[in-house]
Image (cartoon, rainbow over the protein chains, first blue to last red):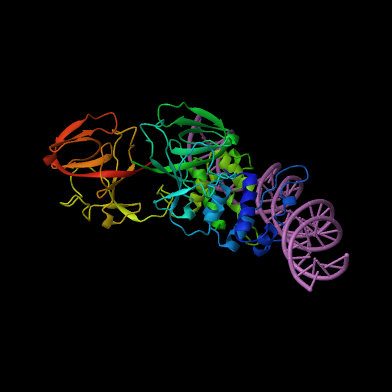
Length: 212
Length: 212
DNA sequence: GGATTAAAAGGAATATATACCGGGTCAGGC
DNA sequence: GCCTGACCCGGTATATATTCCTTTTAATCC
């Protein structure tokens, strides 16, 4: 989905990546420098104000940013520093579930990440998680590596990694998705299914591969 | 980037996917049914008119569509590969079990192979198999891709692909290996374990990855 | 400290997208 | 044929984003 604050956050991040302020970014895109002012993001009556699609288009054009990259900026695990990155190794978080390894934006915090040889440039936003414990047998065994692709579209039945606002990071099977909640089924036998309100979800990313 | 006609094309496609017309989609999203009319997409003076970001957000919300899916709809060759990454091509055999497609060394013979985006050149010997049928649930589902690496060392407990002299190609779990026989356990519930004499084995290769 | 510059707030004017309205077209049902 | 409903066009009114302008704040340089 597309939320008001994330669109604006993505614009701020895009400006920062390109070494500009929001007003500088607007000017560079041929817009009025005040277009992205924080004071223009919420109307006087509290109603949220959105940037127009055309303004977003101009900003992408001006910075040479692909729409997919912009989506990454809106998606927390899609990190800003990946935009211009060149490295090809995939970050590996070895101890999922403890809520660490990610910064407050849900991005992998540097310093806590190892790397694993798997294709996928930083632009893809792909990262890896190492499974600890055997609670997800028979699907994943202790030590298995799962590859997470934040930009892959997610369909019902897909295996996903979910991070909650509480900081839990765990694999699930996405079952039912409504506008307010998502239903997650466990991978493996030891856990039970959950119905989680959307606002408690930090991010969801699809699991595309798993080591055997 | 984000172009005017692609945004509108994506809205049309999104409507069609959900079995609606553009006006029906607008109504469903709580917008005026004429919002997406073709007559509203270009102003009288020829100036392009864009849907607002808020309208796009409402449409995604109403159809339960992720922003990533919408981007895919905007991308002309709606990339079908669900890998989400850029990767080299790996030979893919789509109909395992027929005994063909491999040369006498057990490596993929050219001419009969499709390709799938996964890293690994033919020099690595890496190839892919597409799972047909659900006999290996819950491990592999119909359509899953498994990556086979003939040069990886094999240990007990590993998941392997075995080709017999009879020409069968199938995934197994390697269990016990003696000088004369190997014991193979099934992947999934529908099959039973086998003890196979070594001389009936054409080759064994380890499964290193599986698409999810 | 004073000058300069960039950034941002806040208000008014303008530009642009949406809502609303009436009418035309087309397909399906009676 | 006639009705109904969905869809779309074209015009006007309204809502909303942007522009333009002025003022304030903050950082930098002299």
